[in-house]
Image (tube, rainbow, N blue to C red; front, side, top):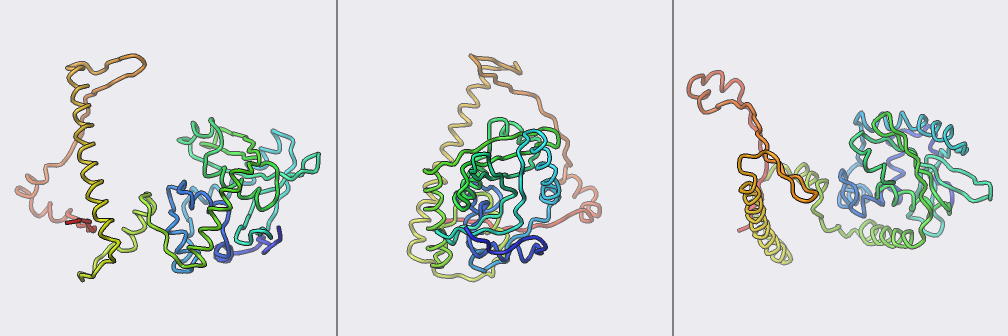
Length: 310
């Protein structure tokens, strides 16, 4: 590996620009479809300079960065393992498209190199961290190990502000080979070759297209021939969804027939509940008729594009 740039003192904008020079550890989970907040298609737009790298300004991201030294310090206190910070962007000499910016490195007693990663997560993720390191982070540290030659990674996480987890991830040569193949294809075909990735069905991709093309221009265009098969697929899946929804409702109604007026039923280890739920709502029709001025003063409008295939 070699040093691309020392990151101490780099602005957020400069750091994001350097990231477009290759594929980083956190990008691996995005390409694999494991990131619910960003899709491979959006990553491609950023790497090819078609959109500016997305900056995360949320309080969650802010405090994640702020708490990184705390997590590292706690890890050292609990394990006695010394972690050295590496304020630099690293690049694989064998696979130059692979970049790494690790939170820290550990030199083991036998001379082997290990990676340290500090994470923070909400309390809702406690069950996930109790089972081990989330899949996207496993890809991230395996990517780092591919770049640095490290034999293992220590992943420490502060969850919900009160639970601390320490996990060890061993180097997995088979997984690393798959990561390299995946990233090499993405970089050479999509980034360097300019081939647009096929949009997937992730929430991130859906949100991206809805945001980028939120308003139509009213024109009609000719679609490519390949769109015909996509139309057929859309129609087939829509029919399946309708059939599945009807089958789901039928199963629900059978369970309701078993319960009758009872709220809870048990069978084997399963628990079925049909609870009374109450909610308050405004009778907008009546409000409009009896208090039209009040109705108009609180009326808001929103618009979105509805996709239809005929």
